[in-house]
Image 1: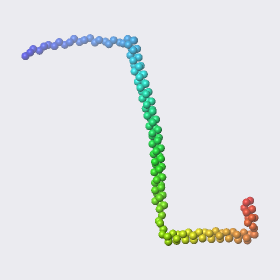
Image 2: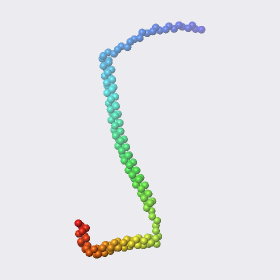
Image 3: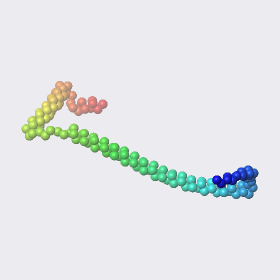
Image 4: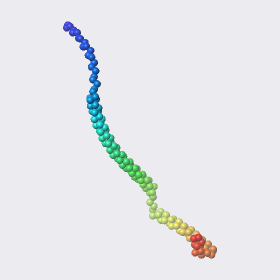
Length: 144
């Protein structure tokens, strides 16, 4: 067998301290950071304005959609009321004999009303005649 070689451990290296940057290097790093932050701010301002524009467009679209919804709901309510009104308003078709009977009943009722009005009028005229005053005198008294 082959003989093993002895490995020698490397000597620990001395840590080299990092050199503190000089004023010029620190100023250059600060200027570089300033430029980076300025470009970042400009980019974010652009994104904010773009987002505000999108937000305004979406708000106007939302308002239009809400108006369309309200208009459609009103239309639906009108249609429902028209449908129920049409269902309630359907009448049964009468035969000619039934219509004639209905007409005769309506005419009889109208005659009775007319007779009652004539009776009232006659009673008023009789009261005027019995009182002895003329119509003109009564009108004068009512105007006062």
